[in-house]
Amino acid sequence: MTVLASILLLALSLRLAVSGVSPVLADIAVELPFGTASTGVLGMLPTAAFAAAGFAVPVLMRRLGLEALLLLAIIMAAVGQLGRAMASDVPSFLVLSGLTMAGYGIGNILLPPLVKRYFPDRIGLITALYVTLLAVSTAFSPLLAVPLEQAAGWRFSIGAWAAVSVAALVPWLVTAWTEHSRRKISRLVLQPYRPGGLEPLQPDHDHTARPPMHHALAAPGVGGAGASSMAGPAGPAPGAPAPATALATTTSTTAVRVWRSPLAWGLALVFAGTSSNTFAMFTWLPPLLVDSGMLPPMAGTMLAYYAILALPTSLLVPLIAARLRNPLGLGLLFTGFYVAGYAGLLLSPSFGTWLWITLAGLGQGTFALALLLVNLRTRTTAGAGALSGFAQGIGYTVACAGPLAFGLLRDVSGDWRASFALLGAALLLLVVGLVVVGRPRYLEDSGQS
Image (cartoon, one colour):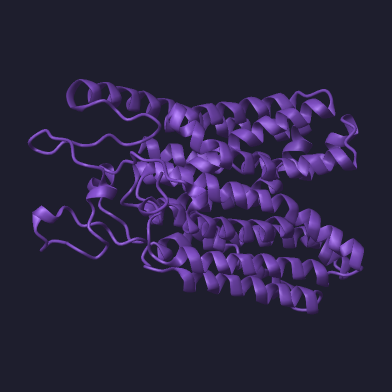
């Protein structure tokens, strides 16, 4: 329960500092002279930091271990949040915001391998819970930001979210101490504990270490209850929950060249497509609606509604997709929601607006599916960390340019057609990625060095 509480508190904290600043930025600018350039930098920090974390986490995870890296990330986020709440100038505010986003970026990448390691037999359920909390924090922190600012000022409004990070730190300290004790026992009784967040090999009855699972496994679908014990344990079908005892013995003794894996590139395209669309909508949906004649307060309400629609998809998609051998059809369904919503917003933005935003908002289910696929397409904690870092690193790098390009195309063309064409191209990348990563297989089964 401690680990579960830790994961859920971490997920809840990951978006609070991202979406809780823009609603009070006008009040911050009264005291700190934010201009167009500094505001643009502030807006790009989350995706830039998340992308950098994606490329750095696999290396840091091997050197520091899963729990130690996570503790460092939470401390970075908490210190950054408290520090920028006390900042006296714009450069300090931006640097400390960068520290905050770097910490949260690391936490964002580590969530899938954490679920892989501690809940290998409940991947769908735990993924559904933490992705739902990501959506909750994204949707509701902007709603609370202004009341907190009105009650105690903008510094309190943006600094208060550090309390959630501190709350997430406590159970992880307990978890880290438990892991430290387990490693000592492993060294004394079993065998040296493998560093870097990897599971130790578990001994069998005659106290001989079992070989790494991805070398001993039969092909998916071969073996089973009736298979001869001489053939080795049967591997779980990719995309289906595996017994915890089986995954607990999984380790990776060879490095996977993620950038050479078609599966990794496929998942990177999924993250790139879904992140580009999501961040473009978060940035430009209100201006688009105002341009069609809607009043600004109502346009803001529509954005909040769009964000809230991520809640049902975050809860249901992982539970459904975890039971599917190939979730391609589910991914195409949510991509279709995006297309239908965008078509309505482009062709009839002032009539049927609620329907168009409902459809586009439901398209966000592709994000929950992408996070789940990190674990469904890997055998090991190390593999999940490498795939999560690579796919999200590429995805958030592309997402950095999405909102900027969306706005520039609007300025150049004079209408929104070219901007929506850009989102259509991003959806094509998403579909290609879904086709590649949907086929049941594991990252560790190919591309090893």
